[in-house]
Length: 354
Image (cartoon, rainbow, N blue to C red):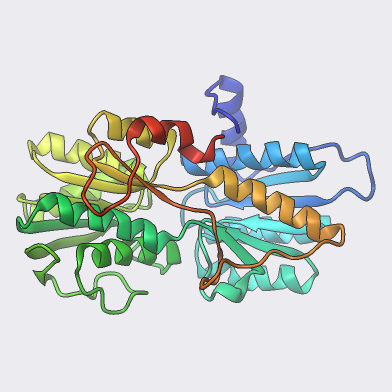
């Protein structure tokens, strides 16, 4: 696939998109050209920057006219609603979107009613049939993998757990699926699997006893991860397990742990990006579940092009209400019974490179 570059021009383009502008690519000289909008949660998280780049590459290969837009920050529903309205007004054939929350659902319905085919990427909406289909990681499985790995690494020791989630003011499937998957992997009864924080705060996991110190929001950002970790350490400085919603939050958490002088902590995360895999290699993150945004974007572009030109609509994976784009555990400390790859192999696969 492609490698990310960090040129000044590339950063300027990202800043333009993050500010609410759009960027188009592809030859629009043909009146019958298929036009697609990609609307990501933001344009600062490397995951979404990579997804945008993957969509550009696929659009060029497929002869699709692509417009890119994004929320100003994770959780910006209003910015995404405006981008959906713009796609309808342009007469786009389809929309690829990583939904920032349920507030975008009415706009998605409006787009579908107007004849656009809408595919969610990475984050299935709730309910799933809000969109035509979702191409995503099995986020519950991603959480479950790092949960099983953590339980195995603890080897029966008591677990004092900090849960660094995405939000505390809105419900998003990627948030509760990862959180609840992690607890399930640990062998902790997650109760309502669509609700974070309702599990018993103390009890037994598969290897011993546990206590959950906190459920703190990070907004999926490094600064949020650091602040959330600081709050958790105030509640209990003896934390020895940190679950993080994504790798930027994990980096922030590690900075807080280092500042507090807290050692011997298992930090686990989800994304498996190129930077995240390096953090596994460097020991900042102990294990991460790798997902593949380049694949999501490529499949999405191809699907809308196929539908717009009279082809078949994609189907969900067996037993799921979305199309599973795969997940792999990356760690340099393998655990018996938990399938994984090491950071060297993880680096060759990061973001879905081929």
